[in-house]
Amino acid sequence: MGKGIIVHLRSMYIDIHTHLNLRAFDEDVDMVITRSLDAGVRMINVGTQVETSRRAGILADQYEAGVYATVGLHPTHTSSGFHDAQETHGEHDTDPGEVFNYSVYKELALHPKVVAIGECGLDYYRDPSDEDIQKQIEVFEQHIALANEVGKPLMLHIRSGKKGNAYQDACSILKQQARVLGDSHFFAGSVEDAQRFWDMGYSTSFTGVLTFTHDYDAVVQAAPKVLIHAETDAPYATPKPYRGTRNEPLHVREVVKKMAELRGVSIEEWQAQLVENAHTLFGV
Ligand SMILES: [Zn+2]
Image 1 (spheres, rainbow, N blue to C red):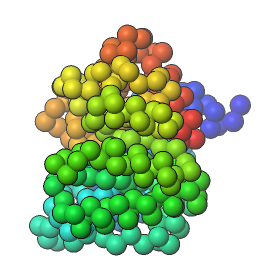
Image 2 (spheres, rainbow, N blue to C red; image 1 turned 45 degrees about the vertical axis):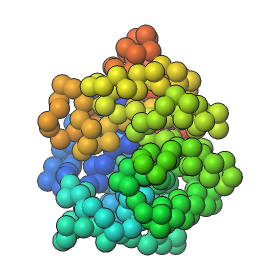
Image 3 (cartoon, protein in one colour; image 1 turned 120 degrees about the vertical axis):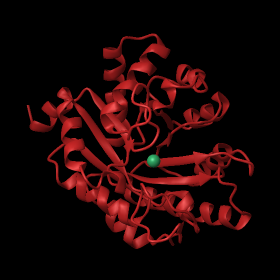
């Protein structure tokens, strides 16, 4: 039995979308990773712009197994706007926005521990202008082209708002252009929105939000058992009973527990299902 197989069997959890590559973890990232891996929690650190994408790959390289990365430009970083001090070392109150450089991201994407392209997609939540939405669409299409070229799945960030149903818009773009599968992370749409993804073979993933609202219970219950994942989106979206503290991959256990309860299956059975699902989509 190879070493990788032993890790796979011992690992009881995988947090498929987390951000230990962000500034919020600068001080203690090694400790946070070590306590996760010791508890059998593997993780995928998700890039949000070029620097955090690069950092996700560097972190993955530092561990023999159990730490993976994605590379991409978050839709809210495609134009200037709000700067999140937990995310990057910005010097200003506003984020200047980034132009998607295909060849730079392609080089990062070819890293063997990069298991997906994103987070990418459409975000209508902060009421972007029509011009900003156009930019988001163009950058999203470039990510799809990159995912097609390197043959890796998409890590999608989609959020609706006043400008419309972003899930619906994203699905029509994916249907026309994507030749890879993907996951709609932090799913916050309706069962009908989710069904469009499931019909395409795409999965939906859920965070600690499940522990403090019932808004997504019906979606979690309706999901095909092979098209669902658990994630933390740390440092954000801390689950109960850790509300008010910085989130971390270890807390994916609370998300898994809540999902198992909603689906009426044992935690052990659900853990095994989710480990299998992550393996199928991301090869981890
Ligand atoms: Zn995220």
